[in-house]
Amino acid sequence: MEKSVFSKTSLALFFLLLSFSAALAGQPTIAAIGPLTGRTAYLGTNFFQSLRYSVDALNQDGGLLGQKVRLVEIDNQSTPEGSSQAVRQAIAQNVDCVIGPLLSSKAIILARELQEAGIPMIAPIATAPGVTRVGDYIFRICFTDAFQGHALAHFAGRQLHAREAAVLIQKNELYSQSLADAFETSLEGYQGKVVFTGEYSAGQKDFTALLKQAIKHGMDVLMIPGYPKEAARIIDQVRAMGYGGPIIGGDGWSKRMAEFTKDTGNLRNCYEIRHFSRSTGNDIARRFLKGFEARYGTIEQDSAALAHDALLAYTHAVQAAGSLDRKKVMQALKRVSFQGATGNISFDAQGDPQKSAMVITYTGGAPQYFMVLEP
Image (cartoon, rainbow, N blue to C red; front, side, top):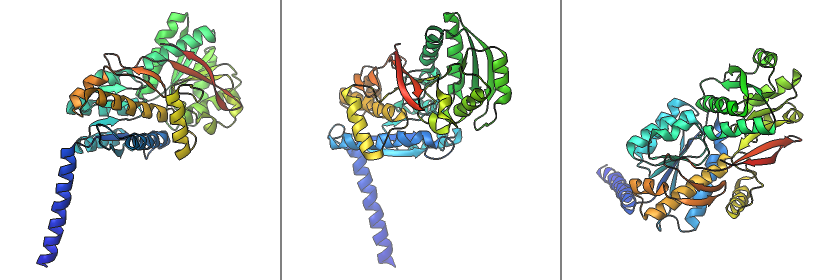
């Protein structure tokens, strides 16, 4: 019995010393936090795949500061509670950087904890302005709701010649509310106004009452700042009610709109803001597309390219700092400038990138490049 206890104790000490040695070596550790389970798990698939692929590619090229990068994947379960648990796990594991999460309402939760802990966070697709207002350790790769709200207002006013808009907002979703607010404020600058605002819930299936009100108010454009399941249902129902006018949305719609609509013909005259398109011509984007899709198949979400660029931003900052020291990396992030899969990226003093946005429309249910809107 004594021999057995001694053997287990020795083994435990061995692994403890091994772990301690790895810590001394300063192996770069990045936590990817996003939805692996829950209501928005479909949004997390490409996000996690992209970071697995990108970290493997980085390690094949020698890693960071001559060391292999370790990726820790943490599920936030698509909930605020899960996000709080996830960020505590990341802090307990003493990670060097957090990439994620995806939704703004969850990103705010992580940002507050990580700012206090002094750990850089790079959000790939959390667009609400308040995310980076939390502090100087918080960055994002995507453009903000303020920018895309203004871009959608410019598009509606100048391209679609719309003057009266109806907006349907998803309840309790920061992204939806902030995008709607930015759109309404900016539309006034194009001699337009929001004539009706309604709210719906995540998972809602019947939007008849809301849409009757929107049509009654004489809208000439319908804005849905939400996610694809509900947005597709709304589009199907409003088309069935006889509205054939333009419908616009933000980056939350994604490529899955065609999957959720009952009739892809209903997507005709629909437009959305996107961060990434297959038609992007730069070499970084082409190499990323080729490598990612050889491993995982066709990209479904913009979060794939944005997650790739978040890792690129961290890589450039570490190399510029010549260190994994979190404060030095944070300071270096403010100065980096590089070309990513989603375009040329540098950060302003707030931690937000100034970058262009793409407008996508649909032909036969397939997303097609329409135009670029500059900041």
